[in-house]
Length: 464
Image 1 (cartoon, one colour):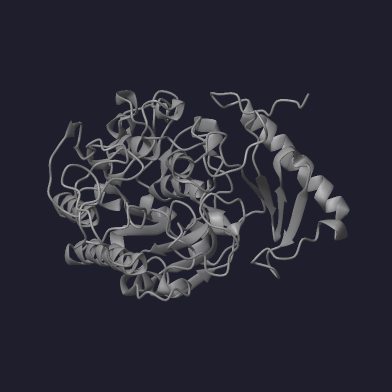
Image 2 (image 1 turned 135 degrees about the vertical axis):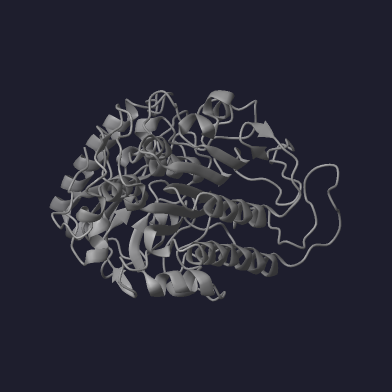
């Protein structure tokens, strides 16, 4: 069930006609009362990349979203790498509950190639919305399984154009194993174009085609993930690969972010041109912290890190007529809250068993109930250090302003006051031993529960 549902009824009357059950056929209702959703997720974009978060590269369209809507300054991905974050986002649960707590790799010889999000065991956001009468589409990156049973159309999407791997050449559309990976629904399809442009174009076309129906469009951009390619740069993978000198990476990165921002602007324009802006919630975020060319801003760590830079990400919500322009919130929220929020707004009922909560009250200026949040990079992640012959990793717990980071084996813990030390420079563990012990025990208990849910051995072996 949805936790901590807001007592306010400001939006409830709008959706009062939509009372559905996921195990029953959709009931007759006023389709115009259902809010549309466009969810835009960048890849490897940092907290400090956008102009509205202090970034140096102009991002006028995303800045406009923030100026006209809600900007969260304490918003997080549930993982610090791609696949786990996306599993949490689409399920509304900690990724460990879905079995996808590490990176799904493109290499068929690697065990991590053969696992993914089980469509028979998980109720997903697109499935919930599809059963509630929404048209649903994914344009861009999937990265929750390569095998046929993990194809995105098995999870409730009516339309899919994009790639199932972690990244592709932006022009040749080959993954890092030089396997062609560009799909139209269930068919591999040749389509010429820069992937950022194609993703945007298909999203806009879908919005225009379904403007008279409620829709959920998941725009999962490849940008700004490697390979580092702008729209005019040469192919880097496959038989048409161009060898030779390349432009400076920082210059190319600037172009990649610029094209991503332009794509957001095109989607906002399509919504306004079709009279859909006041009927549509648009959410923008990133799947984890920044790659090496992107910016964590004032934060410590990057992609893969358990420190703030690895998982604190932009969170921008735009809904003209519903969210007041210039709204800002410092409250803590995470991407697994998006699924509960969306079904709350749409009045969709079901036994979801979320870990996330509805956060719609944030744009009404209300506070969320106190809760603890946890992070643990997966045992198959290539980004976190392992114990000898084991799979233990760093992990963290957040409790209000306090964050505790535990090293592998809990041999060392660090405690930070994020209100006064956002950069996590000052370890206060020695000054607050009781709090440290309490948070450590809570983190350990959560971790032990999660370990029982994973499909592979993750506990470190004992040293002999």
